[in-house]
Image (tube, rainbow, N blue to C red; front, side, top):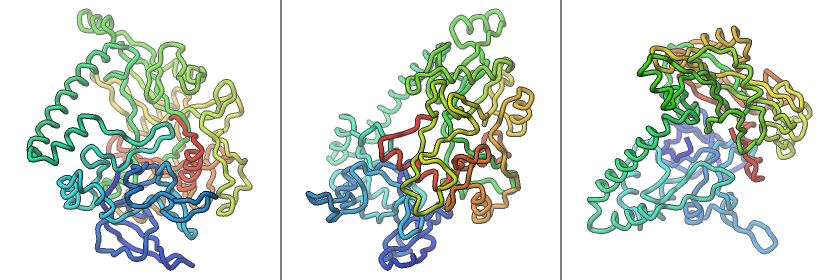
Length: 460
C-alpha cells in the first residue's frame, strides 16, 4: 500500500488555464488521478507513489524535488516537496492529484550501487510494486515520528558484495539469513503464544484493511457487495477467549477443561486488566469494554471507539479547515472540525465492524449479516450500512456509486453526526466473511495531511 508501483497511463485530461501540466489516470488504479507534465508519452512506463508515502531524501535530492529557497524564504527552484519528502493529496489548477507519477529514469541515481537490481526492475511489468533497491529505501510509509530509513550493516555489506565478482552468492546469503530470522521469530511467537497478554490464535490481531484502489482489477464479479461507513476512531478488540497460558493449556489438554478469559486490546497491544495505553493514558477503553460483558465464551469483536476520552480529549485529532475554505463551503462545520459521532465532551461510543467466534477450536470471522444479527442481540452498534448490490465487474460504475457516500468535492457529513464529514466507506464482498476493502474520502485525506504537516498524527 505504501510502496511504489509501475504503471501505464490510461487517459489524459487538460486543465483549464494550465499549458504545462495535465491530469492523467492509470490502467492499474481505476479513476485515481495524478497531475503530470504534458510531455509524458502515454506509451512509457512510469512510477506511481500514493499519498502518505515518504520518499527517501536521496531520491528527492537526486531528482531536484525538494523546494529550494533563498535567504528570505522565497522559492527559487527545485520541486514542490518539503524537507519531510511526503507525498500529499492536493489540487493543481482545481484538479485533484492523488499521489505523483515520475519517469523510470528517476531511479538512475541508484545505478552505480544497484545496477543489476535496477535492470531487473526496469524489466518488470506494470503493476509491480517495490519500496527499495537492495538496501536502499526508495519510499516508506510516512509517520510523524520516524525519519528516513537507515540500512542495516548487513544490507550495506550485501550491496558491496553485490557489486563485486562474488555477486552470485548474494541471493543465497540473503535466503539463509531470512530463514534464520524466520526461525527466531517462530521461537519468539511460540513463547508469546503462552502469554495471555499477547495476540495468539485464540485472540488474533485485526490487520490493516487494504485500500480499494489497489485491488480494482481483482474484485470478485457477480458478487453481493455491502457498503458500510468507515468510522474515524481508535481501533479496539474485546472477547472472551481461551486462556493461552501454560496453566490454561494444561487444563485444556490434560483435563478437557476450557478456561476463558475476558480480553481487551488496542490495535497493537493486549491490555492487562485496568491497563491504559501509553498514547491516551485514559481508561475509556475499559468503559467501552463493559458493553461486551454479556458476550459468550469464544466470541470476539473488533470495533472503533469514537468521541472523547473520559477527561474530555477528542479521541481522534481535530482537523483545521482554514486551508480548504476557498475550495469548499465550510460554514456547516466548526473549525477545527471534531469527530464527535454523536458524543458530547467526556463521552465515547463504539461501532462494531467485525465479529468472530470459536468454531471447532478455531476463531472464524462471521459474515456481515451475522455480525449485525449478533450485535442486535447484545444491543451493540455496528458501523452504518449504506448500500447493498451485486457487483457486475464495471469498475467505473462501482466508483460512481461509491462517490455519493464520499466527502470528495464537497464536505459530505457522516450519517451518524452532521457536525463532521465522513471518513469514507468500506466495501464488504459477501462471497467471503472477510473480503473487505477501504475507500477513503478525498477531503478527509487532505485534512489528515494538513495535520501531519503540523506534526500531528492519529494513533489508531
